[in-house]
Length: 439
Image 1 (cartoon, helix red, strand yellow):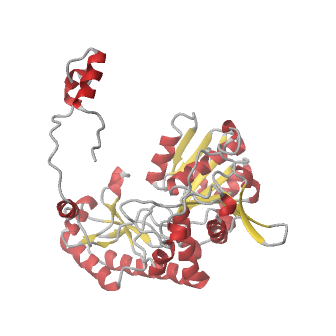
Image 2 (spheres, one colour):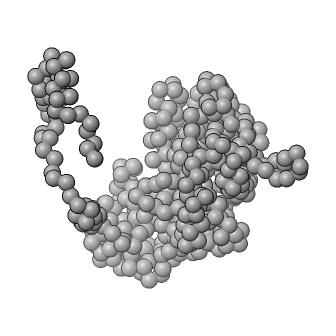
Image 3 (cartoon, one colour):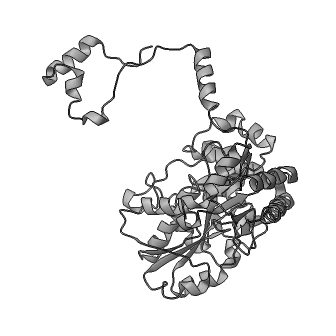
């Protein structure tokens, strides 16, 4: 089958109608350096040839590395049952539940996902998922702006730089005042909080892996009637103080650690939970549980403040398609782990990270940057540029971590190292020995 429906005669007729003699004339308005150099496409290939070609391209990637990369996305074990269950036809082929009452199974799974997020965060209500953690953070910020009718947002510099860039990009035309500052110490909030402040955005563990108790921060923002927003690692929530216990009004985060593969960047899963007072301002879908006239349990979409159901200018979000399959994977993962298993998983992450930190800081010239406590990620300062060290480690089959100079130029020698339950002590030993050899 041809991909272009136009015959040479069709193209000649269209050019004649435009008063042009050739396709080159048609594109003459495009500056020469930006034009295609050639339209000579290679000859078509057979299926085996395409497979071999793509395998060759894929082979150019550094594959099968022992990964200590983190920075918000982690190489966790995914039980085989997760993929087996979400691959069932009734789940895998289901689109977003527009015909709500016809999709009771999907709706029940979303309701159970929402319930799990509420139990993890300690907050009252969760929505049916967002695109990813960064999108969820933006939506939380907009909730604070709508609720308070203020324009100023204070964002801690230890919030993921990726999320901060997303927030800045999404709000560039909204005339908001974004104030970025290191407010890890609550005393640093003095002079920043005022009656124009809509919300305070923090992250726990922060981008450098350090666990915090932000209770004083949220008490301070409540003092000026602003909202507290906390980005979270969902597995860390099994052992850390919850957003609700700290006084946060909105909790958001990236759900990738809950049974989703890294997969070259997605699809991922943004989660969001809020206090009861904010329930009706939450974007996206919310699934509720009810009973029919005969008393039977049923599930339905409810509180849909979306442009499809209400006037466009009153919509709280333009999110039109949640990631139900990713949310299903997350709730299956949580179900397989169970309350006790999730705690054990979190503790195993912390134990392995502590062992790795000890091994790395035993290397002459390598220092721990933070005092902790940490979850499964930590910073170390190297005697050389971290990018150079990481590049040398690739040749040894190890992705040693994330060089922080990419987002924090003043931290060019700092390396962010993540350790999950998948990293054995033997692999951590390879990391330590390899790093010592390349420094």
